[in-house]
Image 1: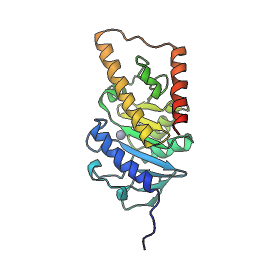
Image 2: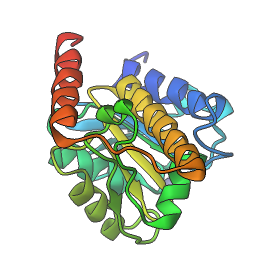
Image 3: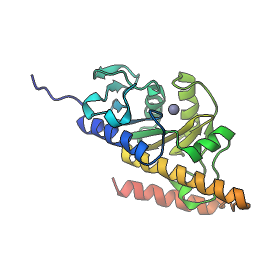
Image 4: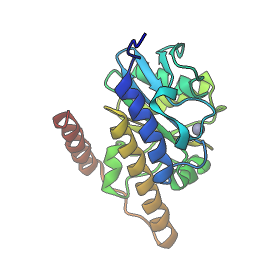
Length: 218
Ligand SMILES: [Zn+2]
C-alpha cells in the first residue's frame, strides 16, 4: 500500500521551519515548536526529536483537540497552545513558538515590547505578555489566546518565550524574527537612552498597511 499520508506540504513546512528556528538563533536545542494548519487538522513538531533530525515523515498530524491522527511520534507537549490558537483565530494557518533571547528577556521581565521601531507592526501595536503558567498546560494555552486576541500576531509568554502566528508557517516565522529584532532594538535603545514610543495614529497606519500586504500576498 502506498496510500498518501495527510498534510504533506504542512509536514514539510514544520520540518524545514524547525531547522530555521535553530539557524536563525530563535531558539536553543529542542526549545520551541512549529505547526501548520490545513482545515481542522494540524502538522506539529514531534516531541523528543532534535530539529536537525526531523524529516517530514516524522511530523505528527493531530486534530484541533490535539488527538493524534497520523504519525509514529508524539506531538510536542506544547500542542495545546497551537490547537487553542487555531480554534480562536480562523485565519491563522501557521504558528511558531520560539525562545529567542531578546524577546525572552522581556518575557522574563513580564513587560510587553512597546512600539519603539516600526516593524513592531508585524505583531500589532505592541507585543503583549501572557502571564506565567507551566509549559504545555491548558492554562498557558488560554492565557496565550487571550493575550493575542484578534489584533496581535505575536505575544510573549512570561518567563518563557514567544508565540507568533501568520497565514502560514513561513509568515509566523517572519513575525517571530521581527519580534526578536524589535526586542533587541528596544533593549539596546533603553540601554543608552529613552526610546521614542510611536504614537497611536502612526501605528494604526502601519498595522493597516502590513495587514493589506498580507492579504495581497495570499
Ligand atoms: Zn516553550
